[in-house]
Image 1 (cartoon, helix red, strand yellow):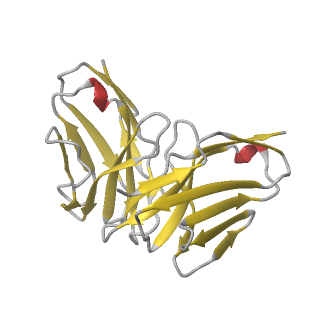
Image 2 (cartoon, helix red, strand yellow):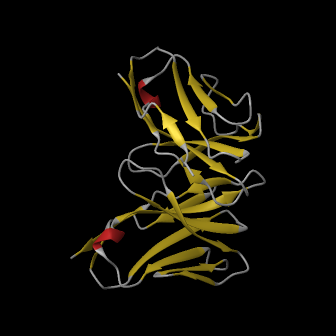
Length: 112
Length: 112
């Protein structure tokens, strides 16, 4: 069955450093992959989308890579800030209906 | 404009009761999705509507769960004979391009 794995442990980093989050998947060949941010008590918020024919995508301090051979995506936040602290969810797009298949999420804590 | 709204924000019910959860999508979004999120997990797909019809209900766990979208806008998720295992946050999302999904804040359902 399809499986998506994200860093199971919380990630603690110092303000100003680069945070790198990992998303690995198996038994799937998605046309594209998305990253969402979720704060406590809120719904996920879309951050970035990367297609299978794109190796890298950037948006301000965010960067996503997508390696379809390794079946892995990396999500980077440069110059991290305490306000970046949240859970980050990786999602693959499933089938013609574009339903999202989410990983369990990685909790990021940026210490001042 | 307004985002996706969901009501109620919290619902506490007793085992065996019937509940209805409502979703108001972003105006003009023809695609609407329902997901369920348990503590520490990513959202899990339940059902997808394109307009008024349920185009994919493969994620509904059993026949106690049902959803409607009679006029192609507001949707209601209905759960009959609730069980304690139904306790979760129920998220609704809408999309205009079947790519990026905009999520509501969710309804936290607690079955006692």
